[in-house]
Amino acid sequence: MKFSSKPLTTLILAACLSLGVFLPVSGAIAAMKADLNSATMEQLEAIKGIGHDTAQQILDYKQENGKFTSMEQLEAVSGVGKVRLEALREAFMVGTTMKNHKKMSMK
Image (cartoon, rainbow, N blue to C red; front, side):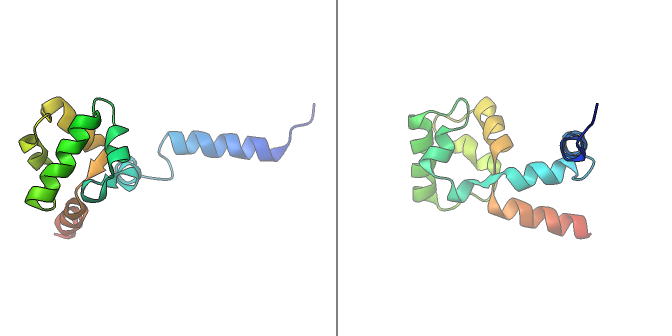
């Protein structure tokens, strides 16, 4: 039986990536998060547990109060409690959060 090296190489690469060998897990997750301040209605609604009304409340809050400076500010939005905040924390970050993280890691 003859094996092709291309599928085997792809399989090994996939296994390594799934184990986080090539990318630190936290870096990979952070790279996939969208900025809450630039999130669209569709991006917000795509999060499990966030419906149209809650997504609209988030957008309205941002329009009335300006950009979010921390994820914790979401608790002030009608319809966002601790459970929804955690769901959003997994999918989004606040633009300044990444900057603050870099500043902290440089210390």
